[in-house]
Length: 346
Image 1 (tube, rainbow, N blue to C red):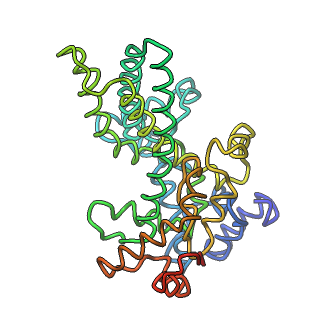
Image 2 (tube, rainbow, N blue to C red):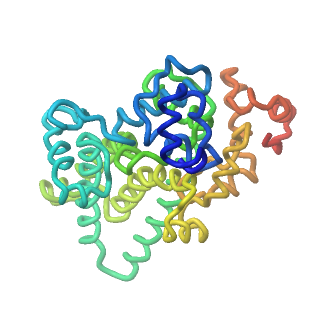
């Protein structure tokens, strides 16, 4: 609340004025936001606001409802999130200080469970893969499989990010919610920084679970039942890296929007081990046409220098007539691509 004169000033504003009159004052770029102010205020009402400020208040309610900000408590002091019997775990964690201190992933029980299932199968696949490595040559092959999987994972995040940024909307079957989340993110990027790890990653965790289930069936389970691993250690490691990289990519993405980045994370960003902050900031310039990869960002220079996405957009337009969102934001880009000039990025 320092921007408005401290916490007491913030509280007074909450009492004296509608929340929409100061909801966005704290926004100063990629990081700290109006959420800091709302932390000390009670029940802002969408009815008092219009346009962007209404969206701010709706986002605030979304944060609380998902347990991202202050948890919403029901009768008896229990958090209202949680699904069925899984809510027991969540309520126990909320009421037990020791469990709270050990809860490094956050989120509700449903979100935690999806991550635990992912990690359990990843552990089984990794353990099975290790038993199949017997020589220096095997180690070299395993290292190559892991390295290629990291590069492919980065590429996959870029292609997926490009697709949901540019095509479809909230009404698109299956992917509607994901598409809306990515497209709205350009307008309200700071909300991502208020999600704990489990909340931020559980949707991706659920999406990769089928891949892990199939891999576990073909690998460790086949080894136990038929004494015949149908994948082999290299493919097992590649699957583990790919699926977990997709989960981590969203967290690496979140770090690029934080204003106060932990020093170890910043060191990893600076050396290119994970998505660099500056690289992703460049993506957040209209028309949002480059730097789509969000795991390590290592594939971004190659994809952007070869105009990979402009060429892909022209192909999609030629085949279907659908224009990407970045063309709608930049007619110059659209006209350039249609004339065979793929270099314009907005």
